[in-house]
Length: 288
Ligand code: SF4
Ligand code: SF4
Image 1: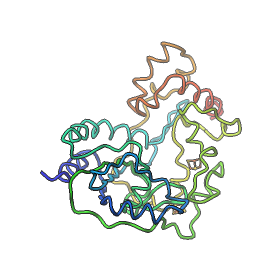
Image 2: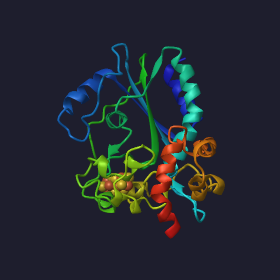
Image 3: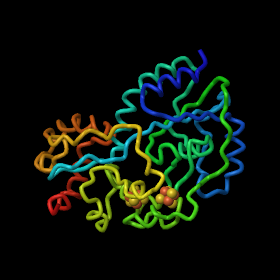
């Protein structure tokens, strides 16, 4: 069976999606053309081997709307909820497909570059990829392919924002003051559950967020269309009430992580990091 039929089948059972495939020669041409483009020059070939025929990028749509937050609780960006949910579904299926030797799951190749060159979308001034159908509300994975297929046309347009700068103006930390180029050390997401110490001046700006800051995405007119995916479920008070995390240490806190991991994934549900972020946002939530 052609490999793209398998990939399409797995994607279709995961979420509404867009799939684009580009051949290796086109990727090489794009890289040469963009080597001095500051927005999209990050593509490395380290993971792309000489037997690959091309690369396929899948974008899975999610819903950016937040449920109502119960009093005294922390919020999360729906991105983490959906990324974790989708990963749990497609990961065993793609791993099984990878065993046939027809695909390789790419883990370290710059996915935004692949998304842009394959036509999944354009770079926004918020440094996130967007397109007309999903806006920027999608989660992406990339696969190396080892057989020929019907390749999509190479996309050579980097951006389509025009004169809009709503995201740049909305960012509370001016992390987008050089449009398209995120200043990582000024972005709130950079400090959430990563173990990197947060500058004092950013703590009040964290508001009630345990993980994720969607201010620049919510400001974007590309996200105006209704999502085809249902909103994430209501917050479970038991999982998100901040007092429980402040009152527990050591093994008590560790025991709370599997429940939290159901929402944000195991990579982020790490006791020491969750505790640190709770310390950072506790007074914001209490001031309410
Ligand atoms: S995620 Fe938040 S802090 Fe980061 S660039 Fe967007 S609005 Fe600014
Ligand atoms: S808010 Fe405007 S400038 Fe920013 S990504 Fe969206 S369209 Fe582009």
